[in-house]
Amino acid sequence: MTSQWQPYREPLRNTLLRNGIIAIAIGAVLSRLGRAPLWIAILLALWPSFGGHWVEVFFLNWLRPRISASRGVQIATRFVVWFAGGVVLLVCMALTARAVAFHPKRWPAGWIGGLAFIGIELVAHLPLLLRGRPCFYNGRG
Image 1 (cartoon, rainbow, N blue to C red):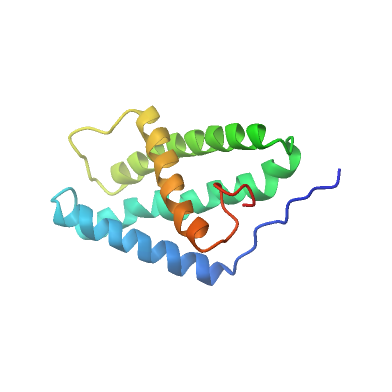
Image 2: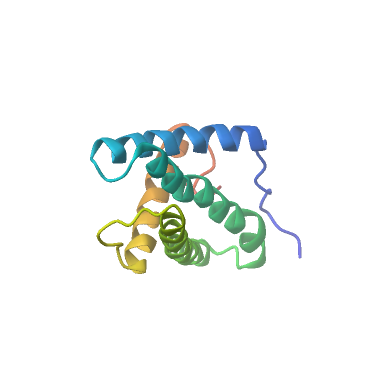
């Protein structure tokens, strides 16, 4: 099966730097809001930033070439992957919080993590669209 899709490649250093900065920024905001100590907030924010990157890479490099090239199928599948990824990432955040003895009053339901991750990805693809880069919105990425 020949695919029209180019695999996504990025140096790990760039991935770590970008997602580390995102996690620090999100962690700082959460810490300022009194949600968690700074180091815990940064640690938990790494799940959607760094873990979310790998959810997207899974779709781009493994799943996308194996499904129909139809735009509708690509969009629907991507939303399913983002939703499932968000649920898994929320569970990982909860397990990490438990491991560091941080117990918030209440964790949101898993489906909220799925919907939140879809929102995060839609926002994350906007700068790519504005720069003319391959992204979800233009169907090239």
